[in-house]
Image (cartoon, rainbow, N blue to C red):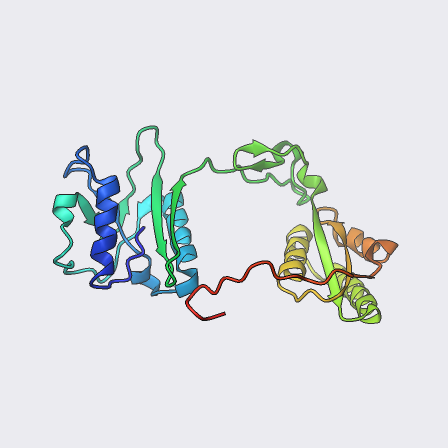
Amino acid sequence: EAHGTGTATGDPTEAGAIAAVFCGTGRTEAEPLRIGSVKTSIGHTEATSGLASVIKVVLAMENGVIPPTINFKTPNPKLSLDVWRIKVATALETWPASRGGVRRASINNFGYGGSNAHVIMEQGTPAPLPVRGANGVANANANGYVNGHVDGTSLEDETKLLILSAKDEQACVRIVSNLKAFLEEREQGSGEDSTVYLQRLAFTLGQRRTLFPWVATHPIPVTRGISEVVKALDSPKFRPSRSTRQPRIGMVFTGQGAQW
């Protein structure tokens, strides 16, 4: 996966470096190195262009295919693709696995300010999906598989950290009370899987909300139903406390030149 911005100077330089590293005497015409760039599909996402390439490669690995580089017609004359044994994928191709059945890919990403990154990704073993019974509770026999390892924790006891915050103590108390009332009402009128809903709720409150000085937080059981979370919110566990530590900036990285 190349950085591939389509510039007259950048593309030949990048392709030449790729050829120097990966396309030695052992590579034949029948097995060229496939290259491409997600930028031909979605454009240049600037500060997140590397992340876009990672997402593309992960999806390609999972599906066992190499996506095409769209609108590629005439290569830069400075690109000696045939000599380098490099092929630009212009149509959807099956991704051939290497010896041992493993797929690997390299990703280039170059920052405007001179920060260059290269990541090598390898296809992993898919984690088994949780097995749920008729009552919607995960079977404990399928617990805890993450990247091929067992964490030893039953999915029936899964917990998430619920974070609520406000600018003053009374506001934080009201937020806890309002959430408790909302969940009580939802428990009576919703047929949605409560485990999935509570997981999403904890994620949104923890990752998509501004964190203010007064915080009420505690782990909640997301697999025991909404009623257990309501009990937790009604207990002293969610008593607001104020953070006394002032945040301190340790590093500033501008990313794209002078932009903050």
